[in-house]
Image (cartoon, rainbow over all chains, first blue to last red; front, side, top):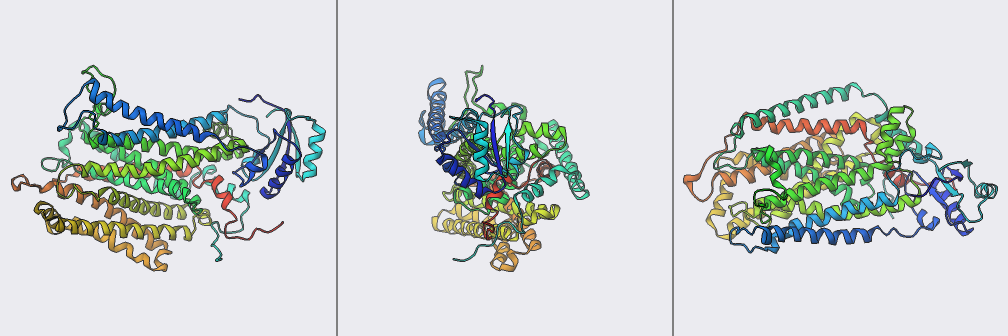
Amino acid sequence: MAKRQSGVAGIWSDDQLILEAAEKMRLAGYKKFDAITPFPVHGMEEAVGIKRSTIPWVTFFAALVGGFCGMYLQYWTSAVSWPINVGGKPMFSIPAFIPVTFELTILFAALASVGTMFFLNGLPKVDPPIIDPDLTSHKFALWVPDSEEGYSVEKVEAFLKELGAEEVKRVAEY
Amino acid sequence: MMDRNPLILGNKTYKDITDDICEPVERLPGKQWMLMFFSAKALFLFYLTSVAIILFTGMGLMGTNHPIGWGTDIVTFVFWIGIGHAGTLISAVLFLFRQKWRTSVARSAEAMTVFAVMTAGIFPLIHTGRPWLDFWLLPYPNQRGPLWVNFRSPLLWDVFAVSTYATVSIVFWYVGLVPDFATIRDRAKNKMRKKIYGILSLGWRGSTRNWSHYEMVYMLLAGLATPLVLSVHTIVSFDFAVASLPGWHTTIFPPYFVAGAIFSGFGMVVTLLTLVRIGFPKFKDYITIDHMEVMNKIIMTTGLLVGYAYCSELFIAWYSGMKYEQYAFINRALGPYWWAYWIMFSCNVFVPQIFWFRAARRSIPIMFVVSIFVNIGMWFERFVITVTSLHRDFLPSNWGMYEWSIYDAAILFGSFGMFLTLFLLYLRAFPAISIAEVKPVLYVGKKRGGH
């Protein structure tokens, strides 16, 4: 996951105002900035310019793998490893194997999706530094890391103030 | 357009929401909670003792014997699994339908699901009679051949269905809790609390990139949990429907069981939430009478569906022209277990009809009483299905009665101790309303002033 960076954060206490500010920031050419919000603010992804998450592809392929493994497990144990005649049913009794196949499809898909989400979000993180404890409660921040093109602390500070940030903070490590 | 009723009452700010919901986690429990917790705990210990006695002495202590091979264990297992279904319905299905009112009740309903499935899972394990060999239920390579499990058996499908359901429900619940744990972590004034919730929150930050993946996964889990929850009770019903016993061998079972599960689950949600509203008066602004009313409407609807299934079963028994099937249903309604059948029928079909009246739907005492009746009725439904079909099958020389023993009663009532202990602990340790989900619906039905 990304190394710790220094940067500047502007803090708002209204989700509508920060949404407008994020939109302006993107239009001003900022690319690496992010918004930190206590809840998913509707429209923020577009405002910050984040592409749709690719996790559904992981879900899809994990589901295929789960379904295949489920069916193969049943085929191999019931028809190959030790075939046992149960009530005269065929060794490879596909209709009877559907429920377990279905359950394993769901199980693989769900666990893989959550695992991917944790991986992409860099969780679990041990003791990550935080900008402000209120950002998980009732405040909203725009965060510009030092990796931003043409970054300078003064310039970003001035821009955040111009956007209407109630408080601008220099962050040494985030 | 008609104005919606606000989902959250009072003039709250985002900070008020955080404060209100975190408050029970951050203070010492009151007398009421302590009293309830110690009662539940006592019942739980009683349950553990009863189970231990049954395991040490043997299954003979319970009433299951020929011809009633399935008794309290299976009945109570199906009862608890069914309870769980409403939680997933609220958290997943209503999420997909964009029902915003779900946000206030989803967390507790999911908690109920997780604990109900845990409580349920123990019963089939006891029912096997030798729980120390229960790992035989899993297909693992062994030195007996290897001898594999029988994948053509609905009982094995159930092992996979219930364990998948338990896993996905817990994961879904936990994913929802992560941002709220982060909220508690950042508010914590006490070092220990900061540490514990810091670990639970996995270091969540809430950047938009995180939220983007998070929301996607939440939707995917909802999409996966929806067919899953329908499949679980379908497969539970296969335990019965695949057997060729009159009263069990019917195609209506899967939808009938799913409707019954949702019905009983909403009954339990209403029971628990009326108590939560009394215990935490501040939550009344979040879990409003409107929320309760919507759930009561669902209880009434699913009650009617269940009633339809009862009548349809009777009709099909007559229409099939099969005398064993006809006898099974006459015997249910008028035989030695007539009382169980009519308790089931009146609790599930007649009692919820009171919700046709708006005043009844919005009265806390009435809905509490009805929800208790629903729970009783749904336990009896499973009792009627399981026991009455087994006790008189094709051969009159094979008939018998269920020898209900004091141990059957002990583990049935004791299991409530386990469920309530877990639920009461949850109410104090976890944010009982989803903080991050409630905030976005703060302004639903209100005018947003200012700018």
